[in-house]
Image 1: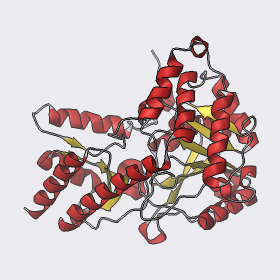
Image 2 (image 1 turned 60 degrees about the vertical axis):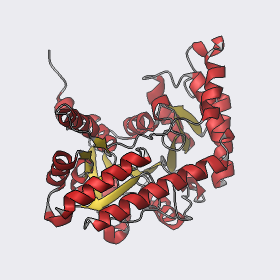
Image 3 (image 1 turned 180 degrees about the vertical axis):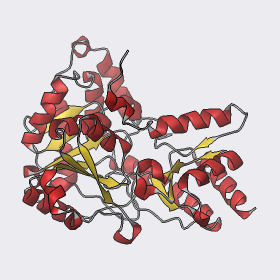
Image 4 (image 1 turned 90 degrees about the horizontal axis):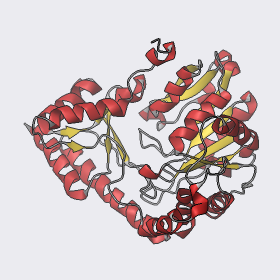
Length: 388
């Protein structure tokens, strides 16, 4: 059989490859500590699970869900945006449910990128964005994220010819993989640039609620007029420990929501309605103290790992958002060589930075989503290995 040429153009998915390597080493009897993927180790909060238990037995939820999402879920999303960010969105025109942010981002690219169009993608970045740009025949244009600029892209450095062909700009703050944060002034500049260049701004807001040291992440939709040019994807996966539930929502530009809806109605049938009801409970019923305590947990884990890495000669930054550390590789090794050697010598799996783009070379990413005792053990192994 003939497989489409586009399949050959896509490199193997980073985390699938990492899981293969983990399994190979574990098969030799090594106790592998996986710091490679950002999958929370804590369970979904009890109130959300209880709401799901109540909703899943309701026969009316067993039919196809509404394509755009249940109105009560979209209303909950609108209430959340208003109370958290002071942003008003019409639940009928400016909000749509999604089967996780990965799905929403991928479908949004299909809605806005034709063959030959340019997608402006930070480098390093979540691999799905570049992959789907290639799938639909678009051209990824890399925006370097570097430490000296706070891992923020320089939009004014984009060549005029590239900007004229661009249809979408992808941003993500707090950032995966760099863990960088952005303030509202940066989003103001980004919205202004996109308005001048007639480009859609897609902001992946997966980590806005996971921040430390007094920092509170803004929404791009807080910028006056942002809904003219911007759409924001909010995932419940990390904040509420719901990665397996596959639930998110898109909010912002009504035109972008309509375009996303055309792709989705011809591709999927929306999230299971019972999951949407549980997600509404997550957004509106989770006590702020619960999220505060979870952020304190991640901050403590960050501090444990930063201390161990610095003792091992790694210049680890004290990040202010996300569930990751983005660290320079010590000693001049390549990302792949360092991460491979670390796995073989210590049984600790971390992610090579070049898996997120060429600008990630020379870095590695650590996820803080393992139990405290396992993280401390990983820290000890790394520290001891580097001292040998």
